[in-house]
Image (cartoon, rainbow, N blue to C red; front, top):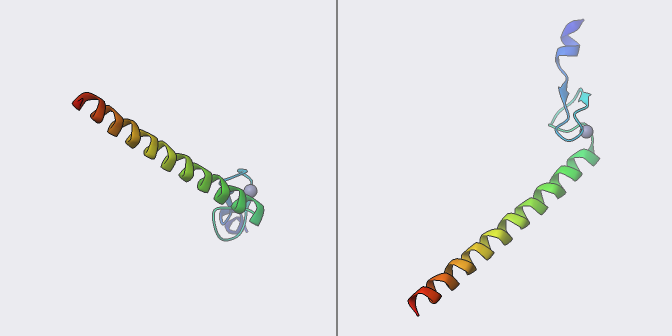
Length: 64
Ligand SMILES: [Zn+2]
């Protein structure tokens, strides 16, 4: 009986306990997480590019 309850896990987005496959309780939670991840990746890429540009500008400025 209690074995069924042990099979549940918590949604990585809303924290709700649910029974099923995957880290999310619903398609909405998965979609939300995916969109969030994509946005974060984009921000990280932008940050990387900006850092690189600043580094190049600094190098050019120093060598002048
Ligand atoms: Zn959820």
